[in-house]
Length: 328
Ligand code: SIN
Image (cartoon, rainbow, N blue to C red):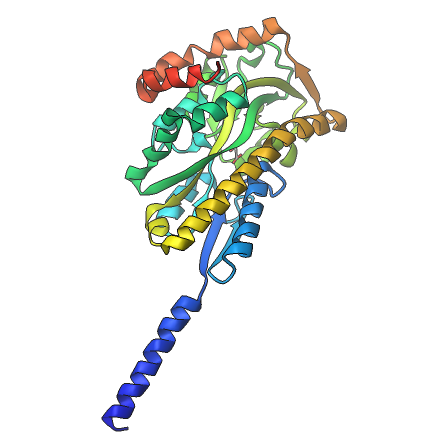
C-alpha cells in the first residue's frame, strides 16, 4: 500500500469511528427501589417515554425498579462510579452526603403536602438541593411520595402503645430519635427487607406512605395501621456531576425538561395514590386502619416534636424557621 492510499484508508477509518461514536445513543440507567405502580415508578416510566419521544436517537433510558440493580444504601455510590446515572432516593437516605436534608425527617414539621411543596420550591428549599454538590452529586429536583403512617402488629393509638416495639426505619438519625422519643427501638434496614422482617416478626412495625404500604403489601403482614401523617417521605432526583456536565448542552436541556414534566406527573400520581391506596388497604380488610382523635394525635406531637431541638444546630435555625413558615 503506497503512502497516499494508507493516508486515505486511515482518514476513512477515523471518520467512521467518529460517526459511530455520535451514532451510539447515550445509555441512561435509572435505578430505584420501589414498585413500578408507585409515584416514583410512574415518574420514571413517564421520563423514559418523554425521552424516547424527544431524544429518540440520542438517549436511551433503562429503568431498574424494585432495587434490582442497587438498594438505596448503595445507589449514590453507584452514581459516583458511573454504574447508574439517575436515582431518586428518599430524602432520609442522604446522611453520608449531606446532613442538611435531615430537616425533612423532623416529625410533624409539615402540616400537609402543600406546605412541603411550598418549602421545597422556596429559595431556602432550593438551596438544599445544592448541598450534595460538594460530594460530586447534582440534585435535579424534589419529588413527592407523601405523608408517612405508622404500622404495627398491635394497635397504636397513643405513644405509650409503641413502647418496647421494634420499628424499621430508613437510615436517618432523626427517625431514630423520633422512635426513641416514644420508647421504641429503631432499626435501620433496607427497604427490600421490610416485608420479610415484618412477616417473620423480627420487627414489630414500620413507618411509610400509603402507596409504599400498599405496593409492597406491608398491610398484609401488619395488623394495624395508624393514620398519623406524622412525617414526610419525599425524594431528591439526583445524578452525578461527571455524567450530567459531560452531556451535550442540547441533550442536558431536553433531559431536564423531560424530568421536570415527569416529576410533575409523579407528584399528581402521589396525590391520587395517597387517597386511593389508603382506601384499597381499608377495602382489603387485611388490616385495621386507625383514625386518631385530635387528643390522641396531640400526644404523638408532644412526644415526637422535642426531637427538633436536637437537630436544630445541624439543619440550621433559619432553615427550620423557613420550613415552619411554609405551613402558613
Ligand atoms: C422509597 O419510597 O423509595 C423507599 C422508602 C423506604 O425505604 O421506606
